[in-house]
Image 1: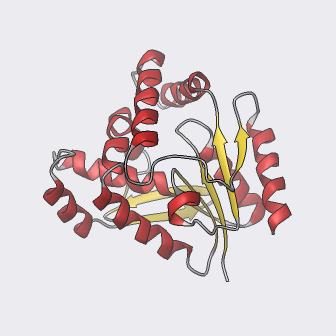
Image 2: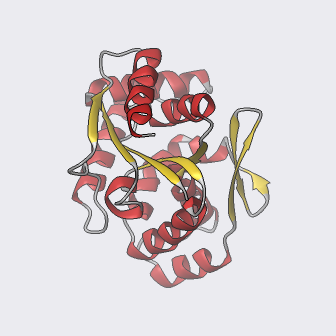
Length: 221
């Protein structure tokens, strides 16, 4: 019997950080579904495949191998047995990931993989449609949110620390465009599940968000 925690929300709300911290404290397996979509996007960009070239994307999906490994408290992402943990977090992938993630063939393939990962495991899975599509019967559903400006500030800080050459204005525009794409796409749009608990992280510290999420989960365990 598995115990599943679904964490959804837009980019820059702290999902990745919070999921990692909560997984460590509660002994749950951390699954970052966004990393999986980023792997598909990265491989498509490497092969110069455009979003409208569905046949090529389907072929890519049939030949791609994605593995997520938690090692020493750190999530490592492997694409075709190569560590791409840093490569999938670049501005170019940020720019295109929402477009590839909106494709039905991509979502269908990765949803199957995500459900398989969740079989007979105690997991905390974060993404955009975990509580609405991937695991609609999850034991706990949490929707993290924050103002667009705050989300852009956080992403800008992360990118500058990684040495990326990008402006706050570029990131703000990218996040605005991603939000439109993710909330208005036809297949599994980003939205709060009716039974999900909303946590607004705009004015909260990481520690405060972590404690709030743990409290919600413990009530259900």
